[in-house]
Each structure stands twice: as C-alpha cells, then as structure tokens.
Length: 159
Image (tube, rainbow, N blue to C red):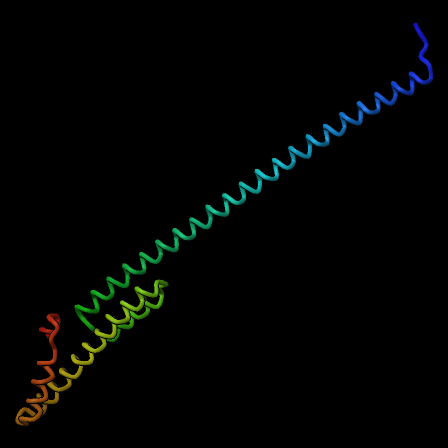
C-alpha cells in the first residue's frame, strides 16, 4: 500500500470536511423546509377552523334572528286579534330582542297602531260603561256612539 503524503492527507481531510459540511447544510436546510411546511399547514388548518367557527356562529345568529322574527309575527297576530296591555308588552319585549333594525322599525310601527287601537277600545268601553250608568243622558249616549263608531278594525266587532 502506498503512503499518502502530508499534502494529500490535508487535501483528503479538507474534501471530507467539505463533504460532511455540505451534507450537514443539506440536512439542516431540509429540516428547515419541512418545519416551514408543517407551520404553514398548521396555520392553514387553524385559519380553516376559525373560518368554520365564524360561519357556524353567523348561521346560528341568522337562525336565532329568524326564530325571533317568527315569534314577533305570532305575537303580533295574537295582539291584533285581541289587543291588550299584556299582549302589546309581550310584542314589545320580543321586538327588543331583534337585531335587524328594519324589522324593528316596521314592527314598532305596527305596535304603535295597536296601541292607538287599544286606546280607542278603552275609550269606547269607558264611554259605554258611563252611558250604562246614566242611560237617560243623551250626551253620554252620543259620546258612547261616537267612540264605538271610531272602532274601524274588523277585529273590534266583538267590543
């Protein structure tokens, strides 16, 4: 076997060191790339989960709003058929829970009309009761008849 010279050994050592260094750099670079991919996947997954949660919460909010609007519609129908302080209060409470401002405004207008109608009904009932107590008084009969004539809603026939 041939003996290597000092220069050849140094050259071979340098080549081996460069080879090991190059392999080490390659492995570190590969590890960094893999780590970056994993971080990117994790971030993408977290973003997807966050978007899914947001979509679910928005869907739940929409469903809740629709259910609340149905409840308001039901209470309004009941209050329209038979207006009373309690039914109007229930409608106002349900309207307060709505988030859609257009629906709130529309429903509040309906409640104002119901309040006006309820006021007319109460006036008519009071005038009739007053007339019943003083059946001979023509003025009270006239006031009672006018109060009854002011009730124009079809649901007020029973009153």
